[in-house]
Length: 198
Image 1: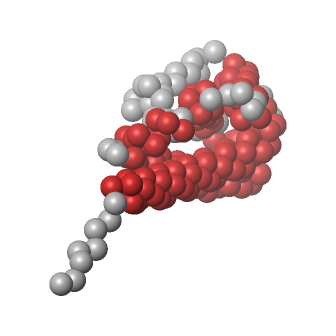
Image 2 (image 1 turned 135 degrees about the horizontal axis):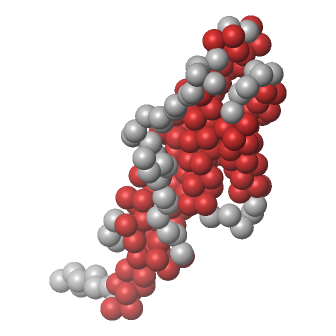
């Protein structure tokens, strides 16, 4: 009569521990990979904002050539650009702070471009048209980079919150990432008023 091959209890326990360890390591590496995708997507957003930031001084210089252009608009754009650069270069700035600075930059530049439309002699210059074309291309790139970032953040956030992966995420300090959302009030077109009677 053949003897029944029976595993001792400690072997079963060891097997379960090994399987849990393999699952934990695999889950941890999956979270690291997803977080890397989010970081890479954010780097692309920053690259496109930097491209825009590099174009703004030329745009401001060209616009200042208009005799009676609103100085406060130019100041707001310059300050928003500086704030964005300071936040982007600050290693202690959170992703939320960087997104807020980006939204402020978006808003100031939008106001400038709307205001510029009231200066046909300025918008007719070749230099301004070239800058405007470059900015339009950059805005499209920013839009795509922000969508890619939001997609990466969504996928990462789902992993971080999904059971049982959330256990590993909690143990190792993986936190959800914020989404890049439109600034409050951006759904309304800016209102620009000019007094041409003076």
